[in-house]
Image (tube, one colour):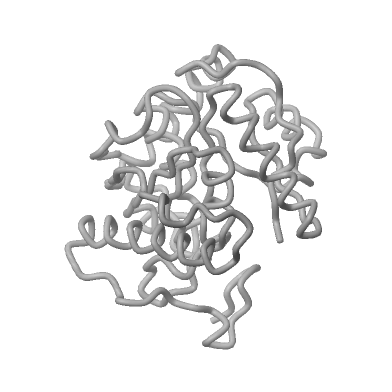
Length: 255
């Protein structure tokens, strides 16, 4: 299972740490040229301290909208990223100095240890991290959130960190799922809705797989409900399960 590596950059997180300013001056206006964000519920994102933010994922471009939304809400947008990316010249340096969280594949014992260490580091440094609980672009034909993985819940429970659900919609107009980029017209509208932290108090028995799965299901249900508000239509009663439809849970979705 993909798990967070404990090798996080040291240092104390501020609401807008200095390392983000020079990058944001260039990157944020460029993203804003592509996406015109309408953000609701920004008050639900903690203004300080650690948090785990769990958004839906349906377009290769939606991390840009999520990052801009988090920045506009006053926090540094830090994602989990594959550990291999940290070894790429230049890109790896950027990921490290901005405090992104490396994710590695490891055994279950190493997984539990890495999750605990990462969670402790987030709490110690007052950092937030963005975790896509689906782990990949949704396989759901209607682009609703599909079944989630337990990584976000594990992080939140390990450090008693608020887990905040987020839904966003509109990025598919710029880059459809596995489609072609469409930059014109600029400023495509994207709605972002940040929900209240998920109550995980009933799922705090650590190490019990059924509890982690049930907690993840609760998180995905909250994300789906937020998306149903944005889309003004009811979400499916059950989350799409790729294995029930003969689909792989990672990699490109074949038509």
